[in-house]
Length: 267
Image (tube, rainbow, N blue to C red):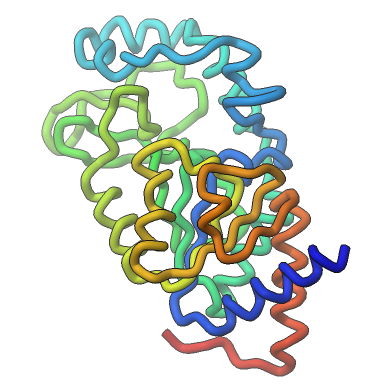
């Protein structure tokens, strides 16, 4: 217990000594909102089998067949299950805690691998979604984004209104490159950071998994929040071992306690 308290105190000290704190979040962030991870015990791929590594190539080769499967809900079982859980999920205390840090001027940006939109639902404003958003559609030809009307569409989306190109869900398929604009935005946020909260991610999926390492090489301090050891644990300055929904609210409370009557910083 004393060791855990000491780690919280160290994390608070690092955060308050920093000028540009960001969070990088992964699937573990949303587990306590009822959204299962992909890997490990209870993971979607563990239960239903792994994904087709050529999803994006299949879409490009035959968009008609892709949308025929979509409209019949004949996707891989893990996709169907993921969408069902996302459709009823609500932000957990970890999401709320990060939104609180942003509103207080402590946290500048969340870079997330999640497509569930729970950071925004909790109140976070500056969110970079590396793998896309469940709330949007995207043209693969010009990159134009538009609202997504439902988790399971009943009608195939029309061609892009801007260029007439092929439209798919904004969420990134296997084999699909992350849009350049998103990569550039995430890299810029990483390069500005002097402290990074790495929350609920194994840090193994590239390119998102490489961002904490880039931040570290730039001189940023890393604070890991995760119940398990990960590929970057040994390089982190502070490790908070536990669930994000429990650790992050405690961290926020401690920051408030050491900053009585504080005024949010102007950035």
